[in-house]
Image (cartoon, rainbow, N blue to C red):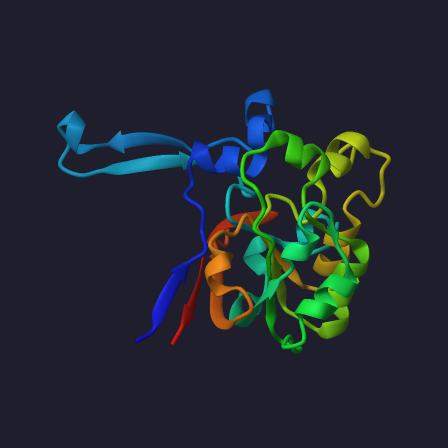
Length: 235
């Protein structure tokens, strides 16, 4: 019987804390979903309907090329087929707390072929600010190039950020001009239409396995990313 494994985090404040630690309470740029009920049974209405206010990089989400590539495709113009297909869950737990190198991927990725999706299992600690400040696991520049050289279509990680979030945003001041290449590992992948999926969960159930995978974004015009429902299925 086919088994479905949900790889998506719930769209709640708990997810923000799990991915960002106490940064969530320090005015971090990603905010929780705001839900405004326009009609609701509890208000005496005969239906329920609401309005969402939501960031395009909340929780489990896909980065579109336009996130870091000036002329890159926005989320409504990406090739959806690159987010659906066979995926290999690479066990790179040996790299936990540092940058994932090309050697780490080479050791774990012998079954990865062109056209596959790569999912990186690290078993990252959740909600630990000190860990994220100093020891967040991240994808190095050489590892990003490794994915390009192997022709994968997408890469998924458990962390909120593909690269070291604190280093890039606070130390390197990546969001402040005149920085011209603030997210080099992101850019290497996204400039080559290798889409990035961040904030995955439950990859430990699939470690070392080849699975069928899908992560479907909403085609919001011009957006640089989108929350997704990511899942895998195995026979």
